[in-house]
Length: 340
Ligand SMILES: Nc1nc2c(ncn2[C@@H]2O[C@H](COP(=O)(O)OP(=O)(O)OP(=O)(O)O)[C@@H](O)[C@H]2O)c(=O)[nH]1
Ligand SMILES: [Mg+2]
Image (cartoon, rainbow, N blue to C red; front, side, top):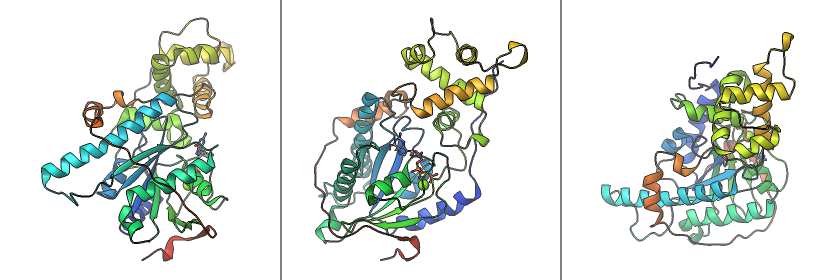
């Protein structure tokens, strides 16, 4: 029997403090690096961070792109960069203006893979400089804060940039509990922040997507509901991957049937041969999280409400390029003394 679907609410105590810290830290940083999950860029964009960020330039880093569908990731990069045209148009219309002669973008986006650390370092340096051009003219180092939802790869990114392990990482949400500052060889300053959700997530589909990907702890989710969400999307978008992974002769006709079939094939059975739906759900969830189903993206820009607007704006969006430089040593400190 199908269970009732409800949005997942998860906003533990330490996130209230993390939100305050982020709101405070934004004032003294030049660039906000928001790490989002390439497999679900819309669901993993935190609306609370967008609100706190205001007009501060933002680099969207699509992490885990080694697990995502490359064509979907390319479409998402175009989607995010098209937001510049939307923002410029809104500023012009509301006379908010800013500097009318400035050609600096407000938002840039890049997909990063864990296996390409050199590329990651070069891209982050280049794009952060593009987003904070005045800082470069004044020969000051760029200060960037790394934020995002839990378990998306923020601390992993800091470690890659630092070329050594300075931040604790782990495949579960809420590993980082307090901000940590790091200084790169180039002088660029970075702050790692705890992952934050937002207090009221009314978006049922989005919250199931986040849970399916592992951003919400397993203790706070209903495995069967979350797996049914994943099964529905996979049946619609990646039927071949399901047929291949579970050696299915035919595609099951519903998400429930898919989970049952996985249970039968993987021996997830209780007494009397009854399928253990929890165990079967667990198989699908973990296969997706580990990339065992292949490279999969659960969301496309065209499945989001803002897609039509972004598509129109895309024609007006432009690209620029830059370069990275470095010297000295990478340094890591607590965040307490990170003030101008
Ligand atoms: N496949 C893949 N795994 C990644 C990537 N980036 C991070 N991970 C994994 O994702 C998990 C979470 O990484 P963390 O860096 O701890 O994530 P975080 O955003 O700092 O998480 P919190 O501190 O809990 O908010 C770890 O198991 C990482 O190895 C990536 O690009 N590809
Ligand atoms: Mg972390």
